[in-house]
Amino acid sequence: MVRCIRVPKAAGEKVRRALIDAGELDPGHCIRVDGDSLLIPTTGDGMGYPVEDDELKAQTHAPTDYREIAEVPAALKDELPSSFDTVGDIAILKLEEPLLPYRHAVGTALLRVLPNLRAVFLDGGVKGEFRIRDLEKIAGEGTSETVHRETGTRMLTDPSVVYFNSRLANERARVAGLVCPGEVIIDMFAGVAPFGTVICKHAAPKVVYSIDLNPACERFMRENMRLNHIDNLVPITGDAVQAVRDLPSADRIIMNLPQIADRFLATALSKLKPTGTIHMHKILECTELPVFEQQLKKQMATAGYEIRIVQVTELKSYSPTMSVYVFDIQSEPLTASVSV
Ligand SMILES: C[S@@+](CC[C@H](N)C(=O)[O-])C[C@H]1O[C@@H](n2cnc3c(N)ncnc32)[C@H](O)[C@@H]1O
Image 1 (cartoon, rainbow, N blue to C red):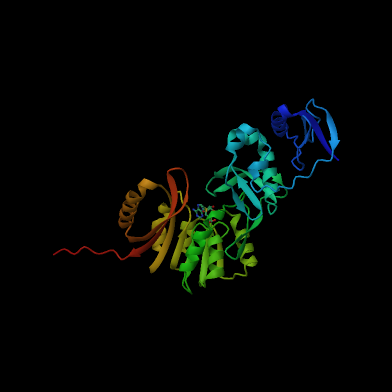
Image 2 (image 1 turned 30 degrees about the vertical axis):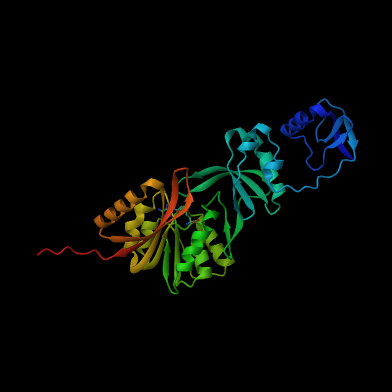
């Protein structure tokens, strides 16, 4: 038998909504029509309507969109996010201010429709030079440490301790596809080494030096080497500018620090073999692209490098008018001016 309240049909929708707002609707059972009344399954004390037991049918429709079952006020339904990130078995989502009091209901709804999820975290944004996320658990169990699967690899990460972006899977696979056997690669801003892990797993580089300033990254890098049976990745904790000084010249350099990577380009060029390629990430206004390219070439010429931008790819949008781009850059010997 199922606990329910008897409500006049005319008041049915209003009461159903009030039960949702109060978190007292039992979503596991169907509402039944009985003459002029509705029997609405509830977990509460009835909201002033008579409470009784009835053989209400179990809800068999399995919703696939968490927004269908999220117990939030009707007026806020449209503000529920239509997308969110998943990393391993956790989901990370942003909520608008009015939905914050209902964050646990939102998290619970996500767990109900996505049984592979273990926990849901509210995203408070990325902060500081380590680019780590401010996360609050709103449903589920355990911490935000998780194993993420990507392109045939498994990567331990924890977005509250180290930077991780599951949306760069295509870019990591693209770069891995460009790597020739025996390449020396430097990843200047490596995080938990997702680029290095995918490259070592799917290409045959001689070595990938994976540098990160955040001391927490090294444990994850080493664990990812173990998880993926990799022995040609070298984790380095420290500042990229200092660390590259002691490294050999590279065939390929990855620069995923999209706010300010261009400030490190001259350092990267100083370590690039003549035939090498740099993959530099950069956030830009879409309209700024041509000006940025010209300025970058000028700045590098002043630093003593002639560069060729061989390809620009938009990786993801960053705001309504800005995107993250990756610039594939090669260096050319400076053409000496000849005076006659
Ligand atoms: C946007 S994240 C990229 C992480 C990784 N490439 C990925 O795809 O997940 C940038 C990383 O650069 C690191 N970082 C910031 N400044 C640095 C510096 N001067 N030298 C080395 N690493 C730095 C941060 O700790 C962060 O992990």
